[in-house]
Length: 459
Image 1 (cartoon, helix red, strand yellow):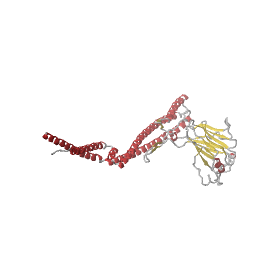
Image 2 (spheres, rainbow, N blue to C red):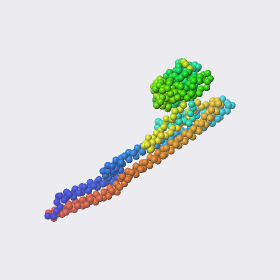
Image 3 (cartoon, one colour):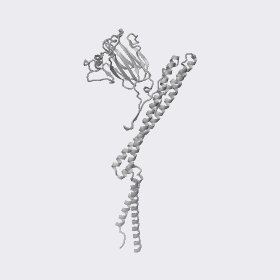
């Protein structure tokens, strides 16, 4: 009997189901062809998938870096706006100072000029407090015009002592909570103690420090004390050869003698090895502390953290013997470097810029006005220097951004090369599976039709 048996129908059904699954899989892979990772996962290409995942992670990181660069551009733009505002203020202050140069103007006119001058000066100081996203726009230590503050007054054994029985220089307002203090001392063998205070906080103490001879003979010892809020105060010791055995308090002119006369004193006082006897060298053989920054306790010397609560510095001397000492405050290097961290090729550090600090500028007298005119001319010139720094920073950003964009483009090109044939291949595969499905469906339809016709004939 002619007919279609059950096994034939089952085979046709299995074939149709397989074709249907093939169509479904092809459609899924076709829909994900725009996603390289999903496409490669569907193809079972583990090596390509690993590469695409890595490149994708790098591109996401670079996208965040690009956003940081845009923030940096805004940061620089705000710095530039502040500098332009400062320039306007300095120019107006310069005009007022020029008018106040006339010694014959009336007291009321000078008072009016001074009132506006002080107002403009205060406005300039407020610019130093401007921030962007919690970051200060300006670094005082990057200011073009800086002034040195000396501490020589009071540091002599013939001067009167303070209420604590100490010789005292200061307090003096150095305007900053960080910086360097250079301290030169000569005690002689009888020893004296030299201390530096920031406000009420002790930040440096030599202990009872001795030198060779008397306080008016042989060499000075130099300490360079560097302090900053919240940081360990450090100091460098600088051996000098600035005199021999001349007694300068009797009028003798000092001159170097090519010997570090204090070597047998300063080495043990710093907690270092005793001298090897060669006084024509600063340090013992095999050691070199030039530029070395001591901190904390070293021998009899101590340094302590600065608090940042005061900008006033005082130098104190304890002792009864002859001594000489002098000191001055100087600026430390800028610290407000804004960094944008990326790969080694795309990391950027923006050079700080600073505005002048004009607290002690005045035009209350013709003499003060003349000094203010001269100082403001330097401040105005300094704005040009700071603008040049901003231009350099912007160039850094532009170069880094272009490099970053090139890296992203190359990464995307690499990903595209891994998957550029997926769309065509999956389209072809989908068409193939659709043809197979349609063929299976047609065979099943014919089988059921033939079976139905045979049944109708027999009945």
